[in-house]
Every structure is written in C-alpha cells, then in structure tokens.
Length: 628
Image 1: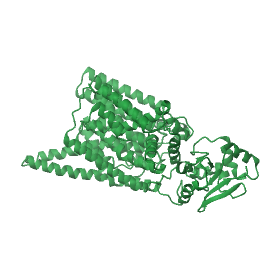
Image 2: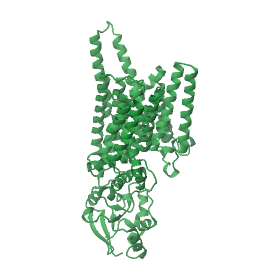
Image 3: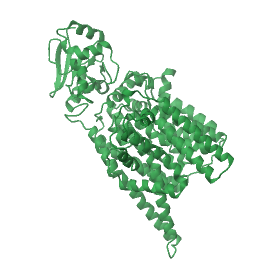
Image 4: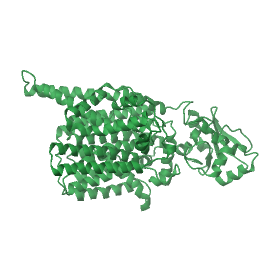
C-alpha cells in the first residue's frame, strides 16, 4: 500500500526509466491514501482498499494524460546507478527495520506514552466506523479535524490483515520509517545532486544514522502523525525543485500537479510538516535561483531570482503568522543555553545524544564544501534555518518574542525542531560525502606514474565499497543507538510503566469474559483505562486525556465513589449509561497532580453498588455498577 499506488501514478506520468521519480512513490502513496480516506465519506464509501484504488486510478489517468507529451529534461538513470540506488535503498530499509523491530520488542507492544492513547483509540474508532477521514479521526479527541495520513494507512493495515490494533500500528510504523523515510531522502538527493550514484548511496546510509529522526518521535509524545509528515518533507522539496527546473508547458504542468499532491500528503501527515517544507523549500529555491543568476547574470535570471525569493519569503511568513497554536500548547521550556543549543544543532545531535563521528565529519565537510564551492550554498540553507529554529526553541526563554513568533506553529517544542535537524542535515552530509569522493577520485588520477585504466577502475571499486561500508556504519553509531534505547524503554511494559503495566494489560485482555459488546466503561484516562477501547473494543467514556467530557462524565469522575450515599451519582450513571469501572490506581501517565480530577474512579472500595468482578495485581481492578 505504501508503494503501489504512488508507483502507479509515477509510472503513468513519468515512466520507469528514472529512479529519481520512482523514489517519490511512497510519499505519493501517502497523499493518495490520506486523500482517498478524506473523500470516501463524501462519496458514501466505507474506508477500504476500494476508494484508494479509485482515487489512484483517477490520479494515474490524469498523470498519463498530462505526461504523455511532456518534454523531460532528465536523462534516464544508467544501469549502474539503478543497481546501486536500489541496493542502497534495500540496505537502508533492512537496517532501519532491524533497528526499530528491536526497539519495539514484540508486535503487540505499545509505546507507554500519553499521546499513544489517542492514536490507538483513533485506529479502533476508524475500524468501527469504516471512516478514516480527518473529521472522524478528530472525534477521538473531540476536535473537528485531525491530520489522517498515519491513521488512514494504519487502519487499512489492520483492516486488510486482521491484525490487532497494536500489531497494525507497529507494522505500519516499520513501513513508514524503513520505506517512506529513506526513499523520500534519496529522492531529494537525486534531484539536488543530478542523480549521482554516490549521493544516492550516501543519503540512503545517512537516513539510518540520526537519533533525532525518526527515532525521537517514537519516544517523545509519541508523535506518529508528525513522523509521517516530516518523512515526506524531502520528497516535497524534491518535487518543488523539479517544478522550478521544469520546461514550460506540459512538463511544468505535471510537475506542479505532483507538487500539489506531495504538499497535500505532507499537510495530511501534519500541517506543521508542510510549514517546515514551505520554509525550507523557499530557502532552497531562493538559493538555487540566486546561484543561477550569479553564474549566468542577465535581466531575466535576476528578475526570476528576485521573484522566487520574495514570493517564497512572503508565503513562509504568511504561513507562520496564520498557523498559530494556543498558549496552553506552546509553553515548552528551553532545556539549555543558546551556545549549547548551537553546538547540538550544528552536529545534529540534540538532547545530549553522542555525535556519530562519521556523520559529524560529513556535516563539517559539507559546510566546508559550500564555502569552497559556493554552488553548494543552497543545500545548506534549510539546515541553517533548522539550526536557527532549534537554537531558539531549546536555548531561549519563553518570553523571547522572536522565539514565540517563529516557533509557535510547532508548539515551541524543541523536540520537533530536533527532528527537523536530521531532515535537513542529510543533504549537507551528502554534500560532504561528494567532496570527499571527488577528492579521492582526483588523488587517484594524479598518482605518479599514472594508473592504468584497469588499475584505476579496480582501486575506485575498492574505495567505493569501503566508503559504502563506512557510511552505512552510521546505523550502529552512538547517536541513533542512544535514541533507539529510549524507544526500547518506551515500548517496554513493566510494573512501573507510565501507561499500562502487565497486570493492567492482562485485565484488559480478559474484559470479554465479563462484558457484553454494548457495555460502557468509566475510569481515569490518565491511567491507561481508555485503552480498553483500542485493545479490547469496549467503549469508554473518555477516549483521550485531552478530550471534552460531558458535565455528567466530569461529575462521575469526581464522585462515583459516593454512589452509596449520593443519589445524584446514580442519576448521572443512568444518563451516561455506565456499566463498569476500570480502576488502575493513582499512577498518572503525565503528572500525578492530574489524578485529583478523577478521585471518584480511583482506589475504589467494593460495595453493593460497585461489585468487584475481576482483578490482577495490587492495582488493576474491574467493578460492575449495580443498583442504579
């Protein structure tokens, strides 16, 4: 599902002779999946493979109609580059799969983090309603709209495979990190570096070596939708640069249409990913057109440079001004000084992750390359912007006005900017790898006496194999290893787990022995009780910590324990329709002080109205409400 729909559209519009286009297939698939899930309810179609197939067919037909007479300036990919690129992609996919499968631990494991409540319950809701549109996904947390790309594909995975929700989530996440992310990054490198084999291999390898992305989002939050949105940013940038360079006419038209599709997928991954892509794309395109104007000065090239720069800057500022988040969600504090933040940013090693020496060397070489060869400056600009945003968010106080203006659309969260460091660092490191590659090649050509053609080819092959092995070793470097160890901790269930202990999970797994399908459960969502819906399919009064419970729900949260002495409790029970109570004790997934709002459903005592039905361990208990 992550390859075929997008590949069908790309093949119809561009053919199969250019690897740079086919590498866009996963990101295109994300857009098609999210769009078809959004459209399906309006066409009165349940969410399944059928609306996806229909939307893919329509998009492929449009791509074929526009592309069949388009003039393509890009030469077909040579056979050696094809083989090297595909081999590098498969290697990266295998490494990332190994990394994250070990971090997840087992197919049924869940991340013990508070945002996982809403994401797991959203999948169950979409399965029950056969609707994975942004409007339905938003219902899980009682909002009108929530980006649905991650949820749409994960729901389809569960639906078609019959897997339980946690397994479907883990499998889909493996596909996102091991297929979407490296392919997207390679697509950008193919466009920026004219399809050079070394650039394709280096970008594939480097996609395995950063702890800040994608690993960080599987521990912090968890931020699954942001992970998908950020993973599509490089593909969106690739299509933007392609459109900038397209020949007038049909080639430009199909490039713009593809850019629109990619932007849609990025936005439905997460809107702040589209904002990041807009800022990075504006800087990248401005750098490219200004470079062209400097190298080939004329009125037309300078007019183009000025127009692209002004337009890109205006759009970026407009998006930043419009995409504001509330103060209650954007109060994340800095965690270090500006100087420390700058050091972490330049090395793309935030949160105290140890730098991987090879990555640090390649980043330094890339920066040096942009100075020695100014043609490379455009590729460094997005990274410079990411470092600036990271320094503001992680190193400056909340009261700083510039910090507030620029970082607010990302909730002023340093972790999100830490991830953007990795997204933008790869092209800089690839630039550094090309500088080293070219230097080695030049050294071989300057040997005295000159090498024979056979010796030159042999030494070049040995050097290429050695360099490939070295750069792929970043997948085991300390930077990504530190982040993956934190992911492993997040996915490990222990008696002290933040979300569900083994006892609590076992009790949820036994709910079907006591409850009927229509029964309703109440309990504190801050203790993991809400996951009874995602894991066992039984409805709960509150599907998320940050939902909008009714007045009766709030009253019961505070007073259900008084059911034997306060008649108003039974009246509220009747109006809400509560049948059972899950009591997992006072341990809170975020902040122990939050338990006060749920004092009525925590640490209950059995009574004639609260009948103890099942229990496991010291805290996990199931009560049946009787006598109301």
